[in-house]
Length: 295
Image (cartoon, rainbow, N blue to C red):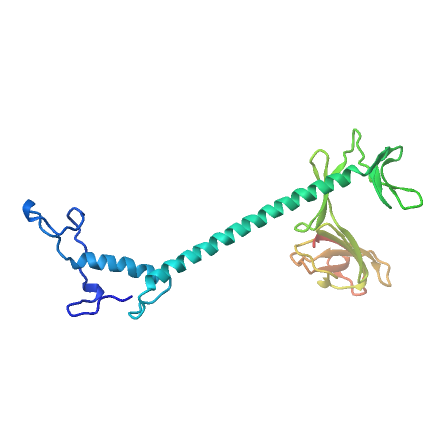
């Protein structure tokens, strides 16, 4: 197949196109008796028919070959074969789906038959060795029974406490965002259980309660004005601090220990150790420090 090869041809961009106006009709050789003129040999109509034929060959993946006079036929056969393969594939998939549905129905029937053959009795259903029997509400609360081959084994379940002041727990989970355990009772109320932990620090202990911590530690000897105290573990915000001094070392005089105003930070504070108003102690004393605040 090939476009016309002759003098007087033009490239595709200059080809004649069908007029946009006029009434479409059929060709005729004309009839002089009726004053009917013969149809003209219009290039635009030839171009349209050739374009329709060429497009079929191109759609089938072909390339025009002037030595091949069977390209249109081959293109039509190729397009038909493609559609035939697609239809066959669709049919195969449908048949596979039908087979799967039959297999599912067969498996369902088998499972129902197996269920019907289980042994029924006082304890519910069960079959085979180590078969579970049932949940039983006994005097000690609910329990699950199974047989280990030698006899029945009863495993108690946790029972919810339900009375005028308590409600059973229906959901339990760890809150990773807040870092604590949440329990939801039968009334839909959430109860949070904060984590607690205790560790040894220099001179005392540190106790974590939820997202707060409490530390108590002892300083064996501290003296003078503006003595620096550093917390064994820093807080994330300013803590609350309580100071409790012993008597003055060596003299047994009463000691006053007070924080230096404005010195408290997340990591420590400064203190004045006095054995009288405005009189700093040079002998010093022992000092208990309690601090409570955010982790």
